[in-house]
Length: 397
Image 1 (cartoon, rainbow, N blue to C red):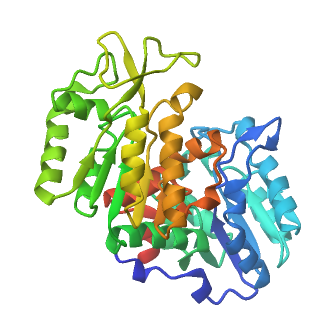
Image 2 (image 1 turned 90 degrees about the vertical axis):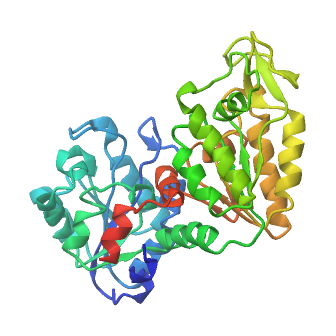
Image 3 (image 1 turned 180 degrees about the horizontal axis):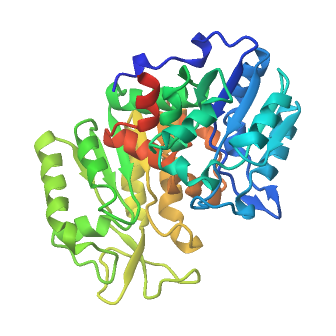
């Protein structure tokens, strides 16, 4: 799609306006408080820009999966407290996102203040992209700002239909995502490497095929690697495999060969006879019949590391092993450290959300060490797969 058609927040006349902002505040809660505020902090530039323009800022968001019903455990009330703490202006919380309660709270909010409306997903109409529901949301603003990159791959009322009723633009966070992911795909500094892991081949076939048209190096790890290794005729013991995807794995390998893409896969493994957090890792070059591989081995780490240090752009999505278990987190953390080293040498490093971000959290690895860490797992995946994202299409109309 043509991103040039999307208006940017800095190009809009927002002075003294009432602005409806879709944010991704789907944050973890613990004991009634926000446990990790990174997603709120990520919207700081946009919200401060609006407050500096004396706007009345009306935030809409979802939390969890309440499935169209009011569930108190998914209330955004604790998020309102965190927003007030972060931005230092009055934050008015409404116990609904449409109707008399929401209207009254928005009306009571002054310019230079913030209103946060209750969970959009308490209404089934949100996920149905219902136009009437979107129209009621649109009443709360004169301009719409899309700042929730993590939801733009969903055709929901607050991301798609609402843009039919208000002039819309992209906030700074969405712009940054589109700029980094778009530039990496359209005009990357080369060599360009993609590191793809995770459990299921079926989730990544589209992604791999699209990347093969763009990358110089494709590195495969994680549970999905064993389907490729088996397709090559290797013994994989009891390792995770999808026998229904053998032909597709062979097609991916053939496409890589035809396009001259260097394709690297694990050459050694950390295996165990039990799948548990306390399982001991044994390093092997060949997977025994009674064992399961749960991570890449040290030779593979060195192979991948040395290749990544030759690259100028690196995109990573998906762990190399069962990183949730300490003995099998080495491979995933080694990719992160190789990318940091490459970044320090001038490479562009992009992490495509989801479990790769969880690897950083688990390994206490600083996200600021990378050029860009995407806030949207599913959205960044679909972006890189080349799919149209409804939330961005709606803004471009």
